[in-house]
Image (cartoon, rainbow, N blue to C red; front, side, top):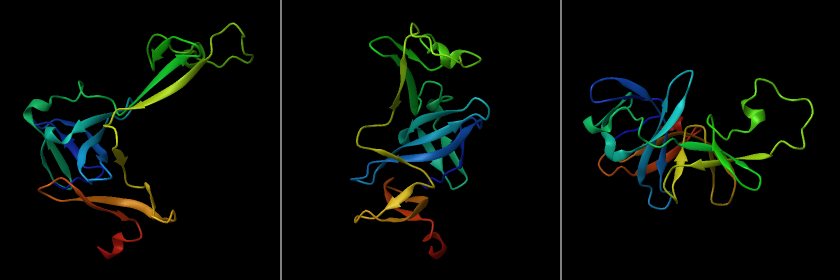
Length: 173
């Protein structure tokens, strides 16, 4: 299976549901476990799609299995929660939002009676995996910057990353 960033993601019925934004891989085993599918134009959402929901993939198109549905039930890649300092929690866009984040304007002076909130982000990919996208920095074993990821190449049968090509190297492959 060849997964390429920005490849169109389609349901088995032929409905376009987004595009591949990045791949999730285990850096130790190089196993590609999921893809992050970017949905929407105005109200965007990134969904975590396990590889077993993918039926076929080419460089231009990823087709999901019939049972994959429309991705609504899959986890969001990043979830932001607002936690009141010292207690309560709310999810972005819902109840419990900090008053200043949901208000149409920012108050000029801080009200000391208004509760303070901090944002926490949860990334919904398996532990010990990383989400790799084109443009990510490539750092050598001796901690030197060597370029940016241009593409991630995978073995067709095993769904393992064979290597991530830095941008300076892609002109040679």
